[in-house]
Image (cartoon, rainbow, N blue to C red; front, top):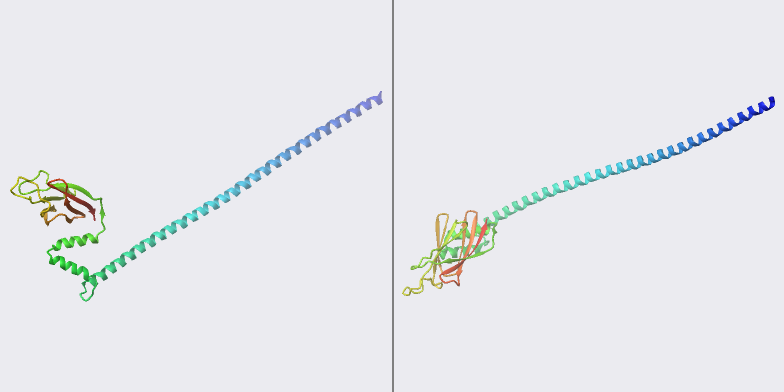
Length: 252
């Protein structure tokens, strides 16, 4: 009996030892598995951090390059503007110097520069062309002008025996008025219309002045009124008793 009891106790101790080894092995396996998962997570986090740091450094370098490029572009544009300004100043000074030199050459009687222009000027003055008209024409040549398209209008012509109701053409918003007076072909007949083959009289009214031009058609005239000029050409019309007025407005 005593021997049997001892065998039972030893078997219990052996079973307890086996149970403890099983639990210890299972616990070690779980710890090992946990450490493996933890190492994987740590490595993954390290990779993510490394990628983020690389992206951040690369993006920072990219922003620095963009800022440097923008600075270079702005500096280039500033230099270009400054060079354009200097070039414009040089051209203006050169133009003024050439103008002064040409003016001096023209005034010099011993120089042939502008001789043809002087001869034409003298010839027109001798023919009775008003000096004011010559001066205005020369001014028009020297100014930069912005001109509109040419326009045409019919204008009724007044005669000794007939004055039409609409015998005035208004240009420049009424600042320039144009009237035309003609001669009839035969005073004996009842025909009140003017004869376009005979000389006519054109009256330009602007700035309180009456500028009168007489002659045969066509008649051309350049009128200056302040900062505006009007190129006018008066021609024959197919409409009886009227003329065609071609005009072009220019802003100086």
